[in-house]
Length: 150
Image (cartoon, rainbow, N blue to C red):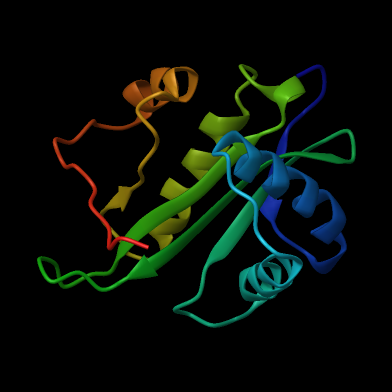
């Protein structure tokens, strides 16, 4: 990026740009969601609910260029809560410029401040570009995800 990158918490005025970024994220994963999900998710991200999701955005030259959503939850193998990084996205023009790394590191810092020793996330096996970063900043685990059929 030609200018400084700022990582900060979401604020109400971010909603239009956040929606554009989240739509890009969902499109990447071949998913669409109805407008009420966007509104509900954004409201949850701004909420003070300790159990709810939280969000950071990456800003450059007054424009949002990336987002990350995460939340803390209890874990049966630990006393402390663990942190799940649920969504991470950088705008196409911002990719390869440190946005993803900066957002992950912001979540790592938030987890440290919350006393959460573990941050984990998932990605699709075909997400080769992101996995190059993840291999540098995280540890690949052997777990395979299953879910209830629709």
